[in-house]
Amino acid sequence: MPTFEQLVKEKERERERERDALYSLWILHVNMSQRQVLQVFEQYQKARTQFVQTIAEFATRPQNIETLQNAGVMSLLRPLLLDVVPTIQQTAALALGRLANYNDDLAEAVVKGDILPQLVYSLAEQNRFYKKAAAFVLRAVAKHSPELAQAVVDCGALDALVVSLEEFDPGVKEAAAWALGYIARHNAQLSQAVVDAGAVPLLVLCIQEPEIALKRIAASSLSDIAKHSLELAQTVVDTGAIAHLAQMTLNPDAKLKRHVLSALSQMAKHSVDLAEMVVEAEIFPAVLACLKDPDEYVRKNVTTLMREITKHTPELSQMIVNAGGVAAVIDYLGDSRGNVRLPGIMMLGYVAAHSENLAMAVIVSKGVPQLAICLVEEPEDHIKAATAWAFGQIGRHTPEHARAVAAANVLPKLLGLYLDTQCSEDLQVKAKKALKNILQKCTHLPGLEPLLYEAPSNILKHVICQFSKVLPHDSKARRLFVTSGGLKKVQEIKAEPGSALQEYINAINNCYPEEIVRYYSPGYSEALLERVENYQPA
Image 1 (cartoon, helix red, strand yellow):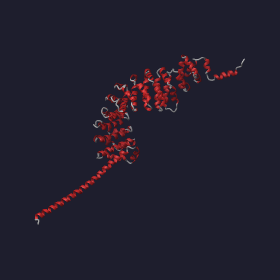
Image 2: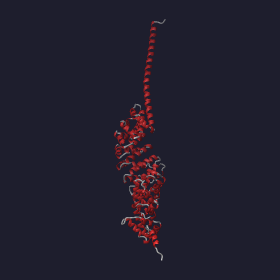
Image 3: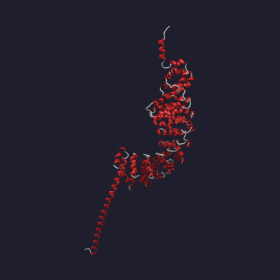
Image 4: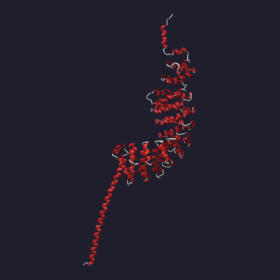
Protein backbone atom coordinates (compact mmCIF):
# COMPACT_ATOMS: atom_id res chain seq x y z
CA MET A 1 0.00 0.00 0.00
CA PRO A 2 1.21 3.51 -0.73
CA THR A 3 2.44 5.43 2.25
CA PHE A 4 0.85 8.59 3.54
CA GLU A 5 3.57 10.74 2.00
CA GLN A 6 3.07 9.12 -1.40
CA LEU A 7 -0.67 9.78 -1.21
CA VAL A 8 -0.05 13.42 -0.36
CA LYS A 9 2.34 13.86 -3.29
CA GLU A 10 -0.11 12.15 -5.67
CA LYS A 11 -2.84 14.48 -4.49
CA GLU A 12 -0.63 17.51 -5.09
CA ARG A 13 0.16 16.28 -8.59
CA GLU A 14 -3.55 15.94 -9.36
CA ARG A 15 -4.19 19.46 -8.11
CA GLU A 16 -1.36 20.79 -10.34
CA ARG A 17 -2.83 18.99 -13.33
CA GLU A 18 -6.21 20.55 -12.57
CA ARG A 19 -4.65 24.01 -12.24
CA ASP A 20 -2.78 23.54 -15.54
CA ALA A 21 -5.97 22.44 -17.25
CA LEU A 22 -7.91 25.39 -15.84
CA TYR A 23 -5.12 27.80 -16.86
CA SER A 24 -5.04 26.34 -20.40
CA LEU A 25 -8.80 26.77 -20.61
CA TRP A 26 -8.48 30.38 -19.45
CA ILE A 27 -5.69 31.10 -21.92
CA LEU A 28 -7.75 29.55 -24.69
CA HIS A 29 -10.74 31.68 -23.74
CA VAL A 30 -8.63 34.84 -23.67
CA ASN A 31 -7.06 34.06 -27.06
CA MET A 32 -10.47 33.39 -28.58
CA SER A 33 -11.73 36.75 -27.27
CA GLN A 34 -8.69 38.58 -28.70
CA ARG A 35 -9.11 36.92 -32.06
CA GLN A 36 -12.77 37.88 -32.14
CA VAL A 37 -11.92 41.48 -31.31
CA LEU A 38 -9.09 41.64 -33.82
CA GLN A 39 -11.26 39.98 -36.43
CA VAL A 40 -13.73 42.86 -36.11
CA PHE A 41 -10.92 45.33 -36.72
CA GLU A 42 -9.62 43.30 -39.64
CA GLN A 43 -13.06 43.21 -41.20
CA TYR A 44 -13.40 46.96 -40.71
CA GLN A 45 -10.02 47.54 -42.34
CA LYS A 46 -10.92 45.31 -45.26
CA ALA A 47 -14.22 47.17 -45.65
CA ARG A 48 -12.46 50.54 -45.67
CA THR A 49 -9.89 49.26 -48.14
CA GLN A 50 -12.55 47.83 -50.41
CA PHE A 51 -14.57 51.04 -50.15
CA VAL A 52 -11.76 53.42 -51.20
CA GLN A 53 -10.54 51.08 -53.92
CA THR A 54 -14.04 50.76 -55.35
CA ILE A 55 -14.66 54.51 -55.20
CA ALA A 56 -11.29 55.16 -56.88
CA GLU A 57 -12.27 52.71 -59.62
CA PHE A 58 -15.76 54.22 -60.02
CA ALA A 59 -14.21 57.70 -60.28
CA THR A 60 -12.44 56.74 -63.50
CA ARG A 61 -15.80 56.49 -65.31
CA PRO A 62 -17.58 59.79 -66.11
CA GLN A 63 -21.03 58.21 -65.94
CA ASN A 64 -20.51 57.47 -62.22
CA ILE A 65 -19.45 60.95 -61.12
CA GLU A 66 -22.87 62.51 -60.56
CA THR A 67 -24.09 59.49 -58.60
CA LEU A 68 -20.99 59.56 -56.39
CA GLN A 69 -21.41 63.28 -55.82
CA ASN A 70 -25.08 62.91 -54.86
CA ALA A 71 -24.18 60.10 -52.45
CA GLY A 72 -21.91 62.46 -50.49
CA VAL A 73 -18.69 60.74 -51.39
CA MET A 74 -16.50 63.73 -50.46
CA SER A 75 -17.50 63.71 -46.79
CA LEU A 76 -16.90 59.94 -46.64
CA LEU A 77 -13.44 60.12 -48.20
CA ARG A 78 -12.16 63.00 -46.08
CA PRO A 79 -11.68 61.06 -42.78
CA LEU A 80 -9.97 58.27 -44.69
CA LEU A 81 -7.15 60.69 -45.53
CA LEU A 82 -6.21 60.35 -41.84
CA ASP A 83 -6.60 56.58 -41.73
CA VAL A 84 -4.03 54.58 -39.80
CA VAL A 85 -3.46 52.35 -42.82
CA PRO A 86 -1.17 54.06 -45.41
CA THR A 87 -2.70 52.30 -48.43
CA ILE A 88 -6.17 53.51 -47.44
CA GLN A 89 -4.85 57.08 -47.12
CA GLN A 90 -3.23 56.91 -50.54
CA THR A 91 -6.24 55.38 -52.27
CA ALA A 92 -8.58 57.92 -50.67
CA ALA A 93 -6.37 60.74 -51.97
CA LEU A 94 -6.31 59.13 -55.42
CA ALA A 95 -10.11 58.89 -55.45
CA LEU A 96 -10.42 62.55 -54.39
CA GLY A 97 -8.01 63.58 -57.14
CA ARG A 98 -9.97 61.73 -59.80
CA LEU A 99 -13.22 63.30 -58.63
CA ALA A 100 -11.76 66.82 -58.41
CA ASN A 101 -10.21 66.37 -61.85
CA TYR A 102 -13.63 65.77 -63.38
CA ASN A 103 -15.22 69.21 -62.94
CA ASP A 104 -14.94 72.44 -61.00
CA ASP A 105 -17.96 71.68 -58.77
CA LEU A 106 -16.20 68.68 -57.27
CA ALA A 107 -12.95 70.63 -57.04
CA GLU A 108 -14.81 73.33 -55.10
CA ALA A 109 -16.21 70.63 -52.83
CA VAL A 110 -12.63 69.62 -52.00
CA VAL A 111 -11.82 73.24 -51.12
CA LYS A 112 -14.98 73.74 -49.04
CA GLY A 113 -14.44 70.46 -47.24
CA ASP A 114 -11.14 71.75 -45.77
CA ILE A 115 -9.33 68.85 -47.39
CA LEU A 116 -6.48 70.91 -48.85
CA PRO A 117 -4.73 71.74 -45.54
CA GLN A 118 -4.58 68.03 -44.66
CA LEU A 119 -3.08 67.24 -48.06
CA VAL A 120 -0.48 69.99 -47.68
CA TYR A 121 0.47 68.67 -44.24
CA SER A 122 0.76 65.16 -45.63
CA LEU A 123 3.12 66.33 -48.38
CA ALA A 124 5.70 67.02 -45.71
CA GLU A 125 5.02 64.08 -43.41
CA GLN A 126 3.89 61.02 -45.39
CA ASN A 127 5.59 58.48 -47.62
CA ARG A 128 6.31 58.96 -51.32
CA PHE A 129 3.17 57.17 -52.50
CA TYR A 130 0.93 59.44 -50.48
CA LYS A 131 2.90 62.51 -51.57
CA LYS A 132 2.23 61.66 -55.23
CA ALA A 133 -1.48 61.20 -54.54
CA ALA A 134 -1.68 64.46 -52.55
CA ALA A 135 0.08 66.43 -55.30
CA PHE A 136 -2.35 64.91 -57.80
CA VAL A 137 -5.32 66.23 -55.79
CA LEU A 138 -3.76 69.72 -55.61
CA ARG A 139 -3.20 69.66 -59.37
CA ALA A 140 -6.73 68.43 -60.04
CA VAL A 141 -8.20 71.28 -57.99
CA ALA A 142 -5.90 73.98 -59.38
CA LYS A 143 -6.45 73.18 -63.05
CA HIS A 144 -10.05 74.38 -63.31
CA SER A 145 -9.85 78.13 -62.66
CA PRO A 146 -7.65 80.92 -61.26
CA GLU A 147 -9.89 81.05 -58.18
CA LEU A 148 -9.40 77.37 -57.36
CA ALA A 149 -5.67 77.65 -58.05
CA GLN A 150 -5.57 80.61 -55.66
CA ALA A 151 -7.30 78.46 -53.02
CA VAL A 152 -4.49 75.90 -53.41
CA VAL A 153 -1.91 78.67 -52.98
CA ASP A 154 -3.73 80.13 -49.96
CA CYS A 155 -3.57 76.82 -48.08
CA GLY A 156 0.23 76.90 -48.25
CA ALA A 157 0.65 74.33 -50.99
CA LEU A 158 3.44 76.11 -52.88
CA ASP A 159 6.11 75.69 -50.21
CA ALA A 160 5.22 72.02 -49.75
CA LEU A 161 5.28 71.40 -53.51
CA VAL A 162 8.62 73.16 -53.92
CA VAL A 163 10.09 71.03 -51.12
CA SER A 164 8.76 67.97 -52.95
CA LEU A 165 10.82 68.98 -56.00
CA GLU A 166 13.87 68.12 -53.89
CA GLU A 167 12.64 64.61 -53.08
CA PHE A 168 14.78 61.67 -54.16
CA ASP A 169 11.87 59.87 -55.81
CA PRO A 170 11.34 61.11 -59.41
CA GLY A 171 7.62 60.31 -59.24
CA VAL A 172 7.13 62.74 -56.35
CA LYS A 173 9.10 65.42 -58.21
CA GLU A 174 7.01 64.86 -61.32
CA ALA A 175 3.72 65.15 -59.41
CA ALA A 176 4.89 68.35 -57.68
CA ALA A 177 6.14 69.93 -60.93
CA TRP A 178 2.84 69.10 -62.60
CA ALA A 179 0.83 70.76 -59.82
CA LEU A 180 3.05 73.86 -59.92
CA GLY A 181 2.56 74.13 -63.69
CA TYR A 182 -1.21 73.92 -63.35
CA ILE A 183 -1.16 76.71 -60.78
CA ALA A 184 1.15 78.93 -62.86
CA ARG A 185 -0.69 78.56 -66.16
CA HIS A 186 -3.72 80.67 -65.19
CA ASN A 187 -2.29 84.17 -64.87
CA ALA A 188 0.80 86.25 -64.13
CA GLN A 189 -0.08 86.70 -60.44
CA LEU A 190 -0.22 82.95 -59.75
CA SER A 191 2.86 82.40 -61.88
CA GLN A 192 4.72 85.01 -59.86
CA ALA A 193 3.68 83.22 -56.67
CA VAL A 194 5.23 80.01 -58.00
CA VAL A 195 8.42 81.92 -58.84
CA ASP A 196 8.53 83.57 -55.41
CA ALA A 197 8.27 80.15 -53.78
CA GLY A 198 11.60 79.25 -55.41
CA ALA A 199 10.30 76.72 -57.92
CA VAL A 200 12.16 77.81 -61.06
CA PRO A 201 15.75 76.73 -60.19
CA LEU A 202 14.46 73.34 -59.04
CA LEU A 203 12.39 72.90 -62.22
CA VAL A 204 15.52 73.62 -64.26
CA LEU A 205 17.30 70.92 -62.27
CA CYS A 206 14.39 68.57 -63.01
CA ILE A 207 14.82 68.94 -66.77
CA GLN A 208 18.38 67.68 -66.28
CA GLU A 209 17.21 64.47 -64.58
CA PRO A 210 17.40 61.23 -66.60
CA GLU A 211 13.67 60.37 -66.34
CA ILE A 212 11.85 61.41 -69.52
CA ALA A 213 8.47 61.86 -67.79
CA LEU A 214 10.02 64.28 -65.26
CA LYS A 215 11.77 66.20 -68.05
CA ARG A 216 8.44 66.59 -69.89
CA ILE A 217 6.52 67.95 -66.93
CA ALA A 218 9.32 70.27 -65.80
CA ALA A 219 9.62 71.74 -69.33
CA SER A 220 5.84 72.16 -69.49
CA SER A 221 5.80 73.96 -66.13
CA LEU A 222 8.60 76.31 -67.20
CA SER A 223 6.57 77.09 -70.32
CA ASP A 224 3.49 77.85 -68.19
CA ILE A 225 5.51 80.23 -66.01
CA ALA A 226 7.28 82.05 -68.86
CA LYS A 227 4.24 82.69 -71.04
CA HIS A 228 2.65 85.49 -69.03
CA SER A 229 5.15 88.37 -69.08
CA LEU A 230 8.64 89.49 -69.97
CA GLU A 231 9.64 89.60 -66.29
CA LEU A 232 8.57 86.00 -65.65
CA ALA A 233 10.24 84.79 -68.84
CA GLN A 234 13.41 86.64 -67.85
CA THR A 235 13.36 84.87 -64.48
CA VAL A 236 13.28 81.51 -66.23
CA VAL A 237 16.04 82.53 -68.64
CA ASP A 238 18.24 83.81 -65.81
CA THR A 239 18.36 80.31 -64.30
CA GLY A 240 20.04 78.99 -67.45
CA ALA A 241 16.95 77.21 -68.78
CA ILE A 242 17.53 77.98 -72.48
CA ALA A 243 20.80 76.07 -72.77
CA HIS A 244 19.33 72.94 -71.17
CA LEU A 245 16.13 73.12 -73.22
CA ALA A 246 18.07 73.64 -76.45
CA GLN A 247 19.91 70.37 -75.88
CA MET A 248 16.61 68.50 -75.88
CA THR A 249 15.11 69.86 -79.11
CA LEU A 250 16.18 66.76 -81.02
CA ASN A 251 15.36 64.23 -78.31
CA PRO A 252 13.57 61.23 -79.84
CA ASP A 253 10.66 61.53 -77.37
CA ALA A 254 7.86 63.43 -79.13
CA LYS A 255 6.07 64.65 -75.99
CA LEU A 256 9.30 66.02 -74.55
CA LYS A 257 10.01 67.89 -77.79
CA ARG A 258 6.51 69.39 -77.69
CA HIS A 259 7.08 70.90 -74.25
CA VAL A 260 10.67 71.98 -74.94
CA LEU A 261 9.71 73.82 -78.14
CA SER A 262 6.72 75.37 -76.40
CA ALA A 263 8.91 76.63 -73.55
CA LEU A 264 11.41 78.18 -75.96
CA SER A 265 8.54 79.84 -77.84
CA GLN A 266 7.07 81.31 -74.65
CA MET A 267 10.44 82.86 -73.82
CA ALA A 268 11.25 84.12 -77.31
CA LYS A 269 7.92 85.87 -77.82
CA HIS A 270 8.40 88.59 -75.20
CA SER A 271 11.37 90.59 -76.48
CA VAL A 272 14.13 90.87 -79.07
CA ASP A 273 16.77 90.07 -76.45
CA LEU A 274 15.11 86.85 -75.38
CA ALA A 275 14.52 85.81 -78.99
CA GLU A 276 18.20 86.42 -79.73
CA MET A 277 19.20 84.31 -76.73
CA VAL A 278 17.11 81.42 -78.06
CA VAL A 279 18.75 81.81 -81.49
CA GLU A 280 22.21 82.01 -79.92
CA ALA A 281 21.61 78.59 -78.36
CA GLU A 282 22.35 77.32 -81.91
CA ILE A 283 19.14 75.37 -82.39
CA PHE A 284 18.94 76.38 -86.07
CA PRO A 285 19.01 74.85 -88.63
CA ALA A 286 18.95 71.49 -86.81
CA VAL A 287 15.54 72.14 -85.23
CA LEU A 288 13.97 72.46 -88.72
CA ALA A 289 14.08 68.65 -88.82
CA CYS A 290 11.15 68.77 -86.36
CA LEU A 291 8.96 70.05 -89.22
CA LYS A 292 9.04 66.49 -90.56
CA ASP A 293 8.29 64.89 -87.19
CA PRO A 294 5.41 62.38 -87.18
CA ASP A 295 3.85 64.18 -84.20
CA GLU A 296 1.73 67.09 -85.44
CA TYR A 297 2.15 69.05 -82.20
CA VAL A 298 5.92 68.91 -82.49
CA ARG A 299 5.57 70.32 -86.01
CA LYS A 300 3.16 73.00 -84.80
CA ASN A 301 5.35 74.02 -81.87
CA VAL A 302 8.55 74.38 -83.90
CA THR A 303 6.62 76.54 -86.38
CA THR A 304 5.30 78.59 -83.47
CA LEU A 305 8.86 79.03 -82.22
CA MET A 306 9.91 80.41 -85.62
CA ARG A 307 6.88 82.70 -85.66
CA GLU A 308 7.78 84.13 -82.25
CA ILE A 309 11.37 84.74 -83.36
CA THR A 310 10.67 86.24 -86.80
CA LYS A 311 8.08 88.73 -85.57
CA HIS A 312 10.66 90.86 -83.76
CA THR A 313 13.21 92.17 -86.28
CA PRO A 314 14.31 91.87 -89.94
CA GLU A 315 17.65 90.49 -88.75
CA LEU A 316 16.05 87.61 -86.87
CA SER A 317 13.78 86.92 -89.84
CA GLN A 318 16.76 86.93 -92.18
CA MET A 319 18.50 84.42 -89.96
CA ILE A 320 15.51 82.07 -90.23
CA VAL A 321 15.41 82.58 -94.01
CA ASN A 322 19.13 81.85 -94.29
CA ALA A 323 18.65 78.65 -92.30
CA GLY A 324 16.04 77.48 -94.81
CA GLY A 325 13.14 78.14 -92.47
CA VAL A 326 10.79 79.79 -94.96
CA ALA A 327 10.99 77.01 -97.55
CA ALA A 328 10.61 74.39 -94.81
CA VAL A 329 7.50 76.09 -93.40
CA ILE A 330 5.93 76.33 -96.88
CA ASP A 331 6.44 72.59 -97.30
CA TYR A 332 4.95 72.10 -93.85
CA LEU A 333 1.82 74.03 -94.85
CA GLY A 334 1.42 71.72 -97.83
CA ASP A 335 1.57 68.65 -95.59
CA SER A 336 -0.75 69.94 -92.85
CA ARG A 337 -4.44 70.70 -92.38
CA GLY A 338 -6.42 72.68 -89.85
CA ASN A 339 -5.22 74.73 -86.89
CA VAL A 340 -1.66 73.42 -87.07
CA ARG A 341 -1.25 75.55 -90.20
CA LEU A 342 -1.93 78.80 -88.35
CA PRO A 343 1.53 79.51 -86.87
CA GLY A 344 3.17 78.76 -90.24
CA ILE A 345 0.84 81.16 -92.06
CA MET A 346 1.54 83.88 -89.50
CA MET A 347 5.28 83.23 -89.61
CA LEU A 348 5.31 83.88 -93.38
CA GLY A 349 3.34 87.08 -92.82
CA TYR A 350 5.78 88.32 -90.17
CA VAL A 351 8.78 87.58 -92.38
CA ALA A 352 7.22 89.35 -95.35
CA ALA A 353 6.19 92.38 -93.29
CA HIS A 354 9.74 93.41 -92.43
CA SER A 355 11.18 94.31 -95.85
CA GLU A 356 10.93 93.97 -99.63
CA ASN A 357 13.74 91.42 -99.72
CA LEU A 358 12.22 89.21 -97.07
CA ALA A 359 8.81 89.38 -98.75
CA MET A 360 10.49 88.40 -102.00
CA ALA A 361 12.10 85.43 -100.21
CA VAL A 362 8.59 84.21 -99.39
CA ILE A 363 7.52 84.70 -103.01
CA VAL A 364 10.60 82.98 -104.47
CA SER A 365 10.04 80.01 -102.13
CA LYS A 366 6.56 79.64 -103.68
CA GLY A 367 4.80 80.83 -100.58
CA VAL A 368 2.01 82.64 -102.45
CA PRO A 369 0.49 79.57 -104.19
CA GLN A 370 0.60 77.61 -100.91
CA LEU A 371 -1.09 80.42 -99.01
CA ALA A 372 -3.72 80.59 -101.76
CA ILE A 373 -4.40 76.87 -101.20
CA CYS A 374 -4.77 77.51 -97.46
CA LEU A 375 -7.22 80.32 -98.15
CA VAL A 376 -9.43 77.99 -100.16
CA GLU A 377 -9.07 74.79 -98.12
CA GLU A 378 -9.43 76.02 -94.56
CA PRO A 379 -13.02 76.39 -93.32
CA GLU A 380 -12.20 78.29 -90.12
CA ASP A 381 -12.51 82.08 -90.32
CA HIS A 382 -9.55 82.78 -88.03
CA ILE A 383 -7.21 80.80 -90.31
CA LYS A 384 -8.58 82.56 -93.39
CA ALA A 385 -8.10 85.91 -91.61
CA ALA A 386 -4.45 85.11 -90.84
CA THR A 387 -3.91 84.07 -94.47
CA ALA A 388 -5.50 87.28 -95.77
CA TRP A 389 -3.26 89.29 -93.43
CA ALA A 390 -0.18 87.41 -94.70
CA PHE A 391 -1.11 88.21 -98.31
CA GLY A 392 -1.40 91.87 -97.38
CA GLN A 393 2.11 91.82 -95.88
CA ILE A 394 3.56 90.14 -98.98
CA GLY A 395 1.90 92.34 -101.58
CA ARG A 396 2.19 95.77 -100.01
CA HIS A 397 5.82 96.50 -100.85
CA THR A 398 6.24 97.03 -104.62
CA PRO A 399 4.37 96.39 -107.90
CA GLU A 400 6.45 93.23 -108.31
CA HIS A 401 5.28 91.88 -104.94
CA ALA A 402 1.66 92.82 -105.67
CA ARG A 403 1.89 91.17 -109.10
CA ALA A 404 2.96 87.87 -107.50
CA VAL A 405 -0.17 87.92 -105.33
CA ALA A 406 -2.50 89.07 -108.11
CA ALA A 407 -1.15 86.46 -110.55
CA ALA A 408 -2.22 83.72 -108.12
CA ASN A 409 -5.83 84.91 -108.52
CA VAL A 410 -5.97 85.83 -104.85
CA LEU A 411 -7.65 89.24 -105.21
CA PRO A 412 -11.12 87.93 -106.19
CA LYS A 413 -10.97 85.49 -103.28
CA LEU A 414 -10.12 88.29 -100.84
CA LEU A 415 -12.94 90.38 -102.27
CA GLY A 416 -15.36 87.48 -101.89
CA LEU A 417 -14.42 87.10 -98.20
CA TYR A 418 -14.82 90.83 -97.62
CA LEU A 419 -18.30 90.81 -99.19
CA ASP A 420 -19.46 87.56 -97.53
CA THR A 421 -21.78 88.52 -94.66
CA GLN A 422 -21.41 85.01 -93.21
CA CYS A 423 -17.73 85.66 -92.49
CA SER A 424 -16.57 86.96 -89.12
CA GLU A 425 -15.99 90.68 -88.70
CA ASP A 426 -12.27 90.10 -88.14
CA LEU A 427 -11.97 88.19 -91.42
CA GLN A 428 -13.82 90.89 -93.33
CA VAL A 429 -11.61 93.62 -91.87
CA LYS A 430 -8.40 91.75 -92.65
CA ALA A 431 -9.53 90.87 -96.18
CA LYS A 432 -10.41 94.51 -96.86
CA LYS A 433 -7.10 95.80 -95.50
CA ALA A 434 -5.13 93.21 -97.45
CA LEU A 435 -6.97 94.14 -100.65
CA LYS A 436 -6.19 97.82 -100.20
CA ASN A 437 -2.53 97.11 -99.38
CA ILE A 438 -2.11 95.01 -102.52
CA LEU A 439 -4.20 97.21 -104.83
CA GLN A 440 -2.23 100.33 -104.00
CA LYS A 441 0.87 98.67 -105.48
CA CYS A 442 -0.62 96.37 -108.11
CA THR A 443 -0.02 97.14 -111.78
CA HIS A 444 -0.86 93.63 -113.03
CA LEU A 445 -4.04 94.54 -114.92
CA PRO A 446 -5.27 90.99 -115.70
CA GLY A 447 -5.30 90.36 -111.96
CA LEU A 448 -7.19 93.59 -111.31
CA GLU A 449 -9.80 93.27 -114.04
CA PRO A 450 -12.11 90.72 -112.32
CA LEU A 451 -12.57 93.23 -109.50
CA LEU A 452 -14.13 95.75 -111.89
CA TYR A 453 -17.30 93.69 -112.03
CA GLU A 454 -17.82 92.85 -108.35
CA ALA A 455 -16.04 95.38 -106.14
CA PRO A 456 -18.04 97.91 -104.11
CA SER A 457 -17.21 101.58 -104.59
CA ASN A 458 -14.77 101.79 -101.64
CA ILE A 459 -12.64 99.05 -103.23
CA LEU A 460 -13.41 99.94 -106.82
CA LYS A 461 -11.77 103.35 -106.54
CA HIS A 462 -8.43 101.67 -105.74
CA VAL A 463 -8.84 99.36 -108.75
CA ILE A 464 -9.70 102.21 -111.13
CA CYS A 465 -6.82 104.24 -109.69
CA GLN A 466 -4.33 101.54 -110.69
CA PHE A 467 -5.76 101.31 -114.22
CA SER A 468 -5.48 105.09 -114.53
CA LYS A 469 -1.78 104.84 -113.63
CA VAL A 470 -0.87 102.02 -116.02
CA LEU A 471 -2.98 102.60 -119.17
CA PRO A 472 -1.43 105.96 -120.19
CA HIS A 473 1.96 104.24 -120.55
CA ASP A 474 1.06 100.82 -122.03
CA SER A 475 -0.51 100.60 -125.50
CA LYS A 476 -0.95 96.82 -125.36
CA ALA A 477 -2.73 97.14 -122.04
CA ARG A 478 -5.01 99.82 -123.51
CA ARG A 479 -5.99 97.54 -126.40
CA LEU A 480 -6.55 94.56 -124.09
CA PHE A 481 -8.62 96.74 -121.77
CA VAL A 482 -10.99 97.52 -124.64
CA THR A 483 -11.28 93.97 -126.02
CA SER A 484 -11.81 92.41 -122.58
CA GLY A 485 -14.76 94.70 -121.86
CA GLY A 486 -12.94 96.71 -119.22
CA LEU A 487 -13.47 100.08 -120.89
CA LYS A 488 -17.17 99.36 -121.32
CA LYS A 489 -17.44 98.49 -117.62
CA VAL A 490 -15.69 101.72 -116.62
CA GLN A 491 -18.25 103.74 -118.58
CA GLU A 492 -21.04 102.03 -116.63
CA ILE A 493 -19.65 103.14 -113.27
CA LYS A 494 -21.64 105.96 -111.71
CA ALA A 495 -19.28 108.23 -109.83
CA GLU A 496 -19.99 111.42 -107.94
CA PRO A 497 -18.90 114.47 -109.97
CA GLY A 498 -15.60 115.79 -108.63
CA SER A 499 -14.86 112.64 -106.63
CA ALA A 500 -11.53 110.82 -106.77
CA LEU A 501 -13.24 107.94 -108.57
CA GLN A 502 -14.52 110.28 -111.28
CA GLU A 503 -11.03 111.70 -111.73
CA TYR A 504 -9.61 108.19 -112.22
CA ILE A 505 -12.33 107.40 -114.78
CA ASN A 506 -11.55 110.62 -116.66
CA ALA A 507 -7.86 109.72 -116.69
CA ILE A 508 -8.70 106.33 -118.25
CA ASN A 509 -11.04 107.90 -120.82
CA ASN A 510 -8.31 110.35 -121.80
CA CYS A 511 -6.23 107.35 -122.92
CA TYR A 512 -8.69 106.67 -125.79
CA PRO A 513 -10.13 108.58 -128.77
CA GLU A 514 -13.39 110.30 -127.94
CA GLU A 515 -15.43 108.17 -130.37
CA ILE A 516 -14.18 104.95 -128.71
CA VAL A 517 -15.26 106.21 -125.31
CA ARG A 518 -18.66 107.23 -126.73
CA TYR A 519 -19.02 103.84 -128.44
CA TYR A 520 -18.67 101.98 -125.13
CA SER A 521 -20.75 104.43 -123.13
CA PRO A 522 -24.18 103.23 -121.95
CA GLY A 523 -26.97 104.11 -124.42
CA TYR A 524 -24.65 104.67 -127.36
CA SER A 525 -26.05 101.72 -129.37
CA GLU A 526 -29.60 103.05 -128.84
CA ALA A 527 -28.46 106.48 -130.02
CA LEU A 528 -26.99 104.91 -133.19
CA LEU A 529 -30.20 102.98 -133.85
CA GLU A 530 -32.18 106.16 -133.39
CA ARG A 531 -29.96 107.91 -135.93
CA VAL A 532 -30.55 105.00 -138.31
CA GLU A 533 -34.28 105.33 -137.88
CA ASN A 534 -34.20 109.08 -138.42
CA TYR A 535 -31.84 108.90 -141.37
CA GLN A 536 -33.40 109.90 -144.68
CA PRO A 537 -31.62 108.40 -147.70
CA ALA A 538 -30.90 110.83 -150.60
